[in-house]
Length: 64
Image 1: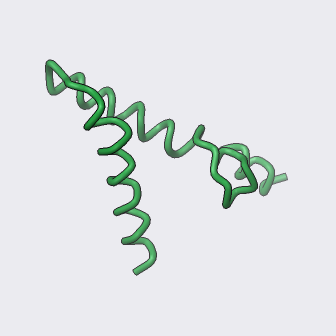
Image 2: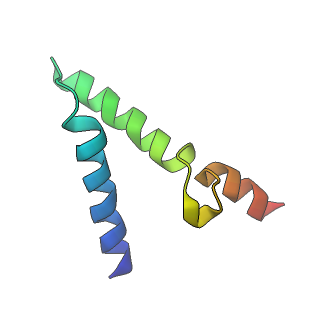
Image 3: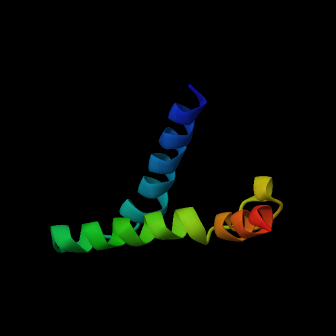
């Protein structure tokens, strides 16, 4: 159940921070923008619940 909420949050962020703010000329532009946003979301965004680290920084710290 909790995973479903995370997915809903992700798509809410995707729409509000990317898709609603831009207009795209082609499907390829949409695909590229979504791919870039997914990369950003999974690796670079700062999260308070991760003690103000990005997910990739937090994973590196946990692995060491």
